[in-house]
Length: 143
Image 1 (cartoon, rainbow, N blue to C red):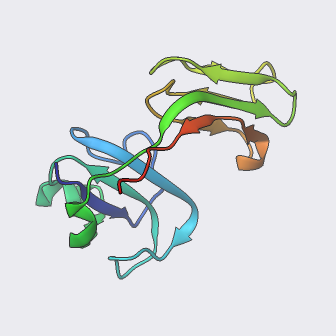
Image 2 (cartoon, rainbow, N blue to C red; image 1 turned 60 degrees about the vertical axis):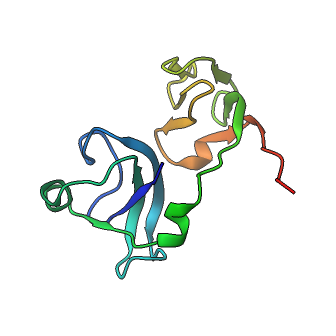
């Protein structure tokens, strides 16, 4: 299945900032970055399993990333064995065990979600609010 990639030029990813339907993966940046296949710095990359319409691209201020070689290759992702983090403020270790199992630490600074399907982190101040303790199994390389 081809993957369609779009650069987020005007805003970081958040609810309502991306079109629905076919969204497969989002990569967010803490600062705007120049990305391969785009002529302007972006706040992140959104990958879809379908091409977006011209209206969606214009409305959400996205730009397609032209990267033909990558779209021909299947996306290989590691298997998530444990999706957990430790709060650097209160020390709680919290783990999400299923797809919508949203867990927050006792001081309310960080949260984890996604179970074994995806790793979502939420924090109040910055990524230094937590230490990632997740465990992954990486696919073996083909000979």
